[in-house]
Image 1 (cartoon, one colour):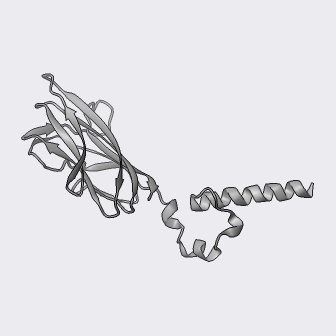
Image 2 (spheres, rainbow, N blue to C red):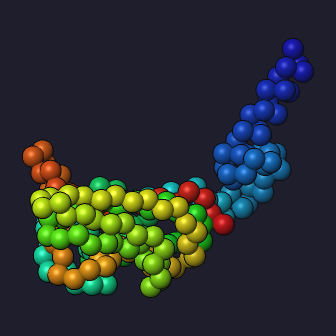
Image 3 (tube, rainbow, N blue to C red):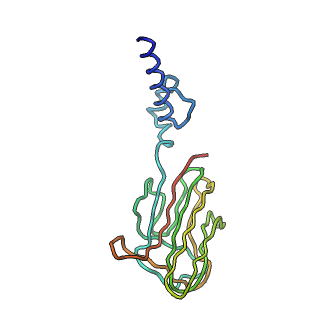
Amino acid sequence: MEQEVYRRLNTTERVLGQYLTGRNNTNLAGLDVLALRTGILDAQLKPVIFSAYKQSSESGISNHVTIRFERTYINLGNHYHTENGIFIAPVTGVYMFHWTIVSGSSDFSTQLMVDGTPRASAYVPYPGGVDSSSAMAIIEVNKDDHVWIQIYGSSEYVYGGSTSIGSYYQSTFSGILLQTS
């Protein structure tokens, strides 16, 4: 019976150590309690997630102009900035970004930009009516890098809409930190 209690205690210490640090080989018994109290491990526990959308449609967007998604569904950490449409990475790591652009003016491309360098793109077709395009990229981003979606075309139209039922045209931009580097 006593061996079973020790076995369960060791398992609990291992699981709690892994949970608190995010590392598989950490045991609670080996953790520095002072490090936990001073918040050294807090950065690993704070999620970085945002999902933004265009609240209103915008026309005449020029080549290389940032698409500004004015509202957010979620913005844990407040690293996405609605005032300019830019996400600023709080830590170096692997991030997943996803964007959907709804348009109805002409065909064009959008680009996922990281500090002024295109890292991914998506083609938005124009079949004579409203259409959309979505893309996703998983990339490494450095701390303090600026990430945004920009137009690659000229005088384009991007739909926005409220979150209410009946608003069928909504352009979005989302990101999540998958792991730190």
